[in-house]
Amino acid sequence: MSKLTPVLSAAWDQADSFTIDGYKRNGGYSAIAKALGMSADDVITTIKDSGLRGRGGAGFPTGNKWSFIPQGDNKAHYLVVNADESEPGTCKDMPLLLANPHVLIEGIIIGSYAIRANHAFIYVRGEVVHVVRRLQQAIADAYKSGYLGKNILGKGYDLELTLHAGAGAYICGEETALLDSLEGFRGQPRLRPPFPAIAGLYAMPTVVNNVESIASVPAIINNGVEWFQSMGTEKSKGFTLYSLSGHVKNPGQFEAPLGITLREILELAGGIREGHQLKFWTPGGSSTPIFTAEHLDTPLDYEGVSAAGSMLGTKALQIFDETTCVVRAALRWSEFYKHESCGKCTPCREGTWWLVQMLEDLEAGKGIEADLDKLLDLCDNIAGRSFCALADGAVAPIISTLKYFRSEYIAHQTNGGCPFDPVASTLFDAVGAK
Image (cartoon, rainbow, N blue to C red; front, side, top):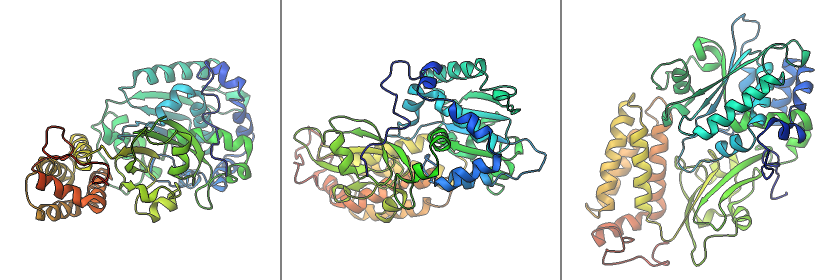
């Protein structure tokens, strides 16, 4: 297995990779003609046979999702791209949109044709103004070149594409909250069923896909199913973007086959920063249970990470060395989830508030060891009891840090404060922090 498979990122080092001329010079927009020459059902079958799975976190097969849209119902169909990247540590979609927005547009055209949609939407995080402007220019250029609008490439297919900038709510990364926000309502998760494939945007059949999922479609159409399946593992096919950040020498985006290990990616990144060692890391962003150095050789695919007790999520590999206080990290993540809870569900609204209160006390060295069991009991009463996965994501890092670093929580109480605080009486060294 090759360690790197640059497909989406192949032209990122070119100064004009984000322009339509740069994209076309590298073979861009060639997949449209091929896709529009196929039947819509054949396009869906191709994506289904390729094994492409959603790159937004859940890993649901993309082709299956498209096939859920009822056909011959005489209703409007919509394709919505979720570009509301907000997970702490996740930073793959925004670099992709900055460097190559046209690959997303081409994927949208193919995906919309497949599900018989004539109107598509990109819901992008409003704070990333530079990304919004780049997308606006790319969409305008695609219209001018005849790739959007009426009678695309003379094939008789029409598609309108609308860019919508959100107002900066993490909850709107959840697909039904995104749809409510897109309709002009407060972004809150919907009760399901009905699912978006039956009653989504404006109560019409809708597919919601992540940026990277849709951006992977043109390469599959151009190169074929066997080419895509030649990368990855048996059940996790293809290439993907791994976002490496934190205490490493060379953080960044690493496009590699699914199934690569963190050890291999760290080798590509030059390893942990000089003089330090790995303490813990997240395989898929802050909402996934943490891993430790013992998981360095875990295959980073959906099945491998799940078998090891976590989730691949958005492949956001946050790396922390021995200087990091695991309790403080759990507190900071919990503060984020408390702030971003939409408040619709009582277990999430109240539970995330109490998580922060308890972790603040624990980080300050207050309480007794029995409080750790109380914290786990609180997590148990939050997980699985809300409309969406925000509550599950809020408790995942807490449960996993207690699993691997319970002694460090206790050390806070013994020390009367954070052992990593320079003003504290005792500092953990590299050995004691493990």
